Image (cartoon, rainbow over the protein chains, first blue to last red):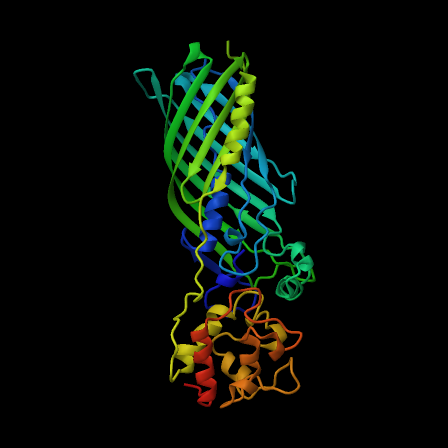
Length: 283
Length: 145
């Protein structure tokens, strides 16, 4: 991504240029998009549970493909950003006294569709009020880690009918796939509300929040000797962005529950996420 | 209930999308005007810096085809300097843009440089106004000003 956006920098030696991008330029939008993809959203109503209840969850989310215009990041050459159509994230939560809930999530370093994530998430929430039947729960999250993928230099370029792309892969990419590192570091604060209906079988919920992105994209072009080509910049985007969630939790049969959620980060992503949960020690 | 959930899952997934339009700036963030009497440092070098002296391309570190277009290097690498891709042309022949390899590499007409792709490589071309500014600079003798 984004070698074309490099600023005026004559480089020699091994120092990396860090290139700042606003949220609304092509590279910033792409980084915002993938930051939103890995956001640690609530995915489920924070139902009251006894202290020391442990939830074991599996989350999956759809990663919508990007159009060629969205992938070009201001260039002609599209970035190979449509690698993974979905992700799977194991999660766990423990409920402390006063219904304080600590959630952990991890995208483990298993290569899937050429993408290798290693992203951790943590969240803390607790109910603070009831307004009629709606339980109000503030929630704070932090997500960090690395996602590795051949985005800047993908071998698809060598097979392209476009001669420029072939030459780019040969000369700029040194005939090798890049080892790009997408490095999100983001926290969020949100307010969620939920209310049980249908005798408690369904719990609709919704929330709004603010997310702070501090995202890097380390362009990892690999030299023929296997070293990292330091002539390419590290892209950096920092921004505050709003987001909203709406979903429903279905308490299927103890200890199982399922949740579906719409997640919207305006200017980045609108997607659906799903979660299956097993609650342990909840009685 | 199961059918409702499955149906909802399918419907929600169909709605998913990337919620942005990537802006296209054909000027490359550079002035898109014809400069009648261009100055190298003010009007020409910024184009090289922004569009050519980028990671992996014509930087000091990468120097593709032996050409560095970073500030402080570009003038001497271009003017009255033989092209490493052509036995015939100088990279910039002062006063004659059509016989300058730089101009040929920036044109969309492939016949001007058989076997070589248009520059900037795999990127938006310079605008017509930006190209004309380079033409004006070459035809005025490619001064180092």
